[in-house]
Image 1 (cartoon, rainbow, N blue to C red):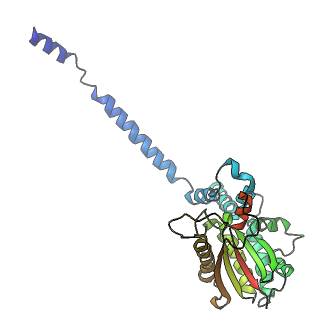
Image 2 (image 1 turned 60 degrees about the horizontal axis):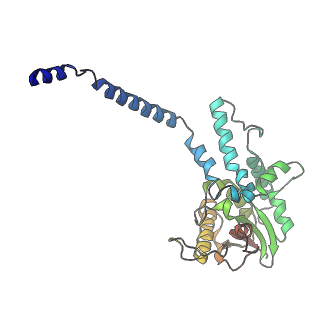
Image 3 (image 1 turned 90 degrees about the horizontal axis):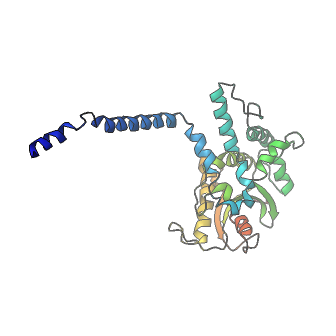
Length: 275
């Protein structure tokens, strides 16, 4: 009986059962290759640029200062270029003609810089004339730059201020690629004028805890050095005119007792010394 039972149980086995596992394996392989194909068709550069502007935003409770985030011209430029490629169009950006608003403004600034090559900026009004020429005609283009560059004047000279959220990730000193078009526009003006330039980094009063930077002074100086290096090596600003330094947290422009104030104190200043 044992032999009969054993033989009967073996006869009940399904010889095609292995096909279930084989079919699952084929489905997984098919899904994998479909995923690879879909990823290869994405515009990776555009996605990386778009997502980079959200770095530094901590969550819904910190979105009160996020007006700067949505105005990155590089994202508009990349998105428009990608859309025109996909549609097989003429390279036009939606709502902005064949060039982005920043490109239009840069052309105007370059034309004015050529006329005023070698001039010395002696007042805040003179500096603003460089960046916002023909504002009655090109007001919309100027609005692209205003949230990113702040202008002021003090005993050191005329000051251009760039906030941390525009230039860097939190606690980092490497310049974000999305801000390069703004720095290119800035370099057009700095290259045209004759003022000596001083690049200074600032932080808030929260102690720096990064392993890379020992203190707020260290972080502030490295940020200023990277902006200095960009202007020197990428934009060709004369090294004889450039100085660099860091104030750490000792020169706040707003109280450090609120997150909004601390965010505004984290900045890099480019000072055009009066001659």
